[in-house]
Image 1 (cartoon, one colour):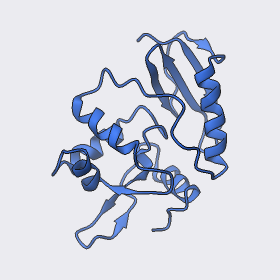
Image 2 (cartoon, one colour):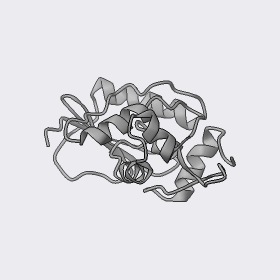
Image 3 (cartoon, one colour):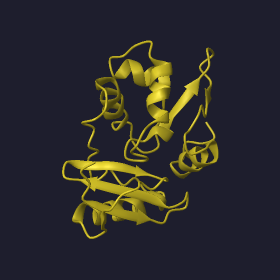
Image 4 (cartoon, helix red, strand yellow):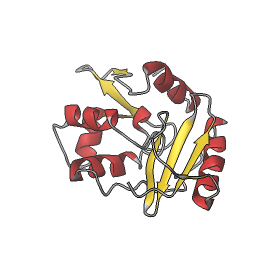
Length: 162
């Protein structure tokens, strides 16, 4: 891994860990990555901190100030993540809808797998993807950080309860 900078951000859902490489964000999540990284002082990671402050105050911070480096991901995951990054603050989409929007119809289960292995928490907002039953009713679905965290993030954005 060609990482340059690391920064930890205290947050209401737990400490968030960012690893930035020369071509963008390599990792952003609740689990720290092992490795020797420069601590903190890069401008993109400072901007990310300001973005997080806005987000966790309940305001729409707009697009994230750093792009995820998706070079090592499959084309399917890149397609799904890029499409999900268009789902704005306070919006939700179902697993099947997201697959269709990314030109991968009938891929709801694979979309769920991509959400479960998302290395860019909040940047690729997988908490905005929900399950829908045959009657069209929404439910939380799953979330790799736990349903309490997903519920909190959706409440913060004004989208829960449905």
